[in-house]
Image 1: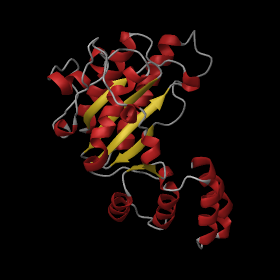
Image 2: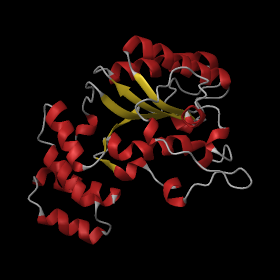
Image 3: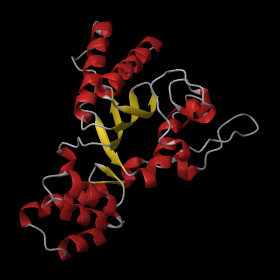
Length: 261
């Protein structure tokens, strides 16, 4: 599947995320957070990458990136490897393993005209959803306040591309966030095709045609897109049985489909 393939291309826009190994905290204090942010600043200059939004939680991070150059892999290798070295050196007496992150960073190629606004909200609402704060604006370690008020306390976010996609979160009488349940429960995984494309089938086809050498997987993606619309295991089994698919991958497709949907 293309989710394992190289996804570096010019003017790519991505949702990037990673989590601490065994769900351990990777940001234990402000020094850790500033270390990560300073790495982002260095990366911005070194690789000409554009940071559109961010949020640093206790045991994971979210980045919204634009890569004018085809260098996402180099960008994230620079950030994750250097932060991991910093973290291990600082906490070596407390660590039980030699790893900081649970694995390679996760990434999604984002269809901005359809999902930018929702993804911005998802990233910024993380602290509220996890009950760190009563409102996204009360959380220091994200780009929410830069979008809402223009106050930039970090110096590495460029919001020009997404300014019109940002929707402020209203406050209730007690100052708490007024976020409807549908927005709060929105998860990128539910809208991501083949674990890589946060977009519709037409967006995915365009990415394949312009940036992937191997286009044979696109038929599988169309197949999975059909499966994604189904909800019952019976319907999924009937659908799998009705499509002429290579018998070698039939079992894997069926198991994956049942587990996913």
